[in-house]
Length: 98
Image (cartoon, rainbow, N blue to C red; front, side, top):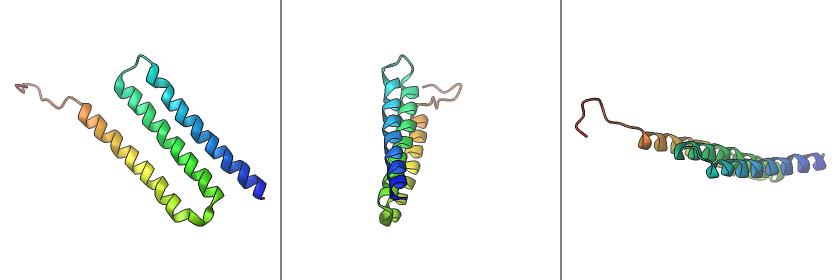
């Protein structure tokens, strides 16, 4: 049973690392900065959550802190995405002198 938990744990950690590198790859493309930031933040969030799940399988006695870390990652990165989208949007109204 312990071997299965170790395999699942290391599998989650490897998947997390793959997401990290996969999200970094679009940074060298020709797309817009917002597309690059979106790709990076989504892949970073999924990768980080996968790594924390792998840690949760390794050290289940720390589940309250690791669950808090997962929730914080999900909420923080979602809010950061909304803030970036709001800051980059054109907020001027038609007829506005700006």
